[in-house]
Image 1 (cartoon, helix red, strand yellow):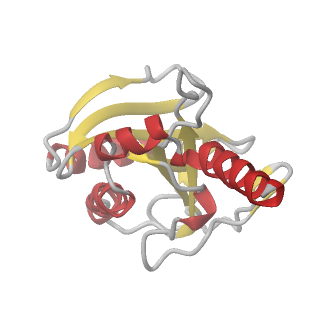
Image 2: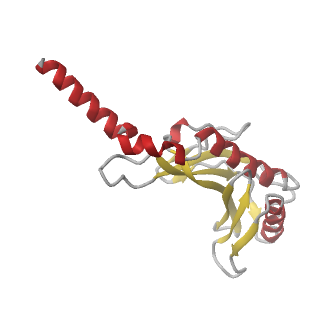
Length: 199
C-alpha cells in the first residue's frame, strides 16, 4: 500500500515536471507542432539560400530553442521559440557584402518579407532583420561579423515563435547540411575562398 502510494507520487511528480501536468497538457494545442515549425523554417532558409548567386558554401546548421517561462503552478511550459542557424563557410569581402545583403533581401521578399531593420554601412557588424511568412510568421536575420583581414563571416538565422517544446539536439539540419561544428570559442569554420564573393 505504501509502496503504491510512493510510486504514484513519484510518477505524478515526474509527469508534472516534464510538461504533463494539467495546465501544460491543457495548453498543448496552443503551440505549433515541431514538424510544422521546422518545415516553415526550412522553407525560409531554402528560399534565402537559393536566392544567392553564385551559391555560397556552408559549414552546417545549428539550433537554438528558448523555452517559455514556467507556468504559474510551477509546471514547465511546453512552449518555445525555435531558431535554425546556418553558418556560411564562404569568406565574403567588404566590397561584395552589400551585394550579398541585397540578394538576401530580395529573396526574403518572396516570403512576403519586409526588412524591418538594416545596419548602416559604417556599423562594425553588418546585419538585417526581417519578418516573413513561410506558411506562418518567421523571423529572419542576416548577420555578418568582420574579420581582421577586412572580410566577413556570415550567418543566416530563421526562427518562429510559439512552438511545442522539443530539445535542440532532436532537430535535424536543413538537408543536405549537417550539424555545424563548434567548440568553446564558437563555430569551427574551415573558410572557403570564392572567386566572386571573397574578392
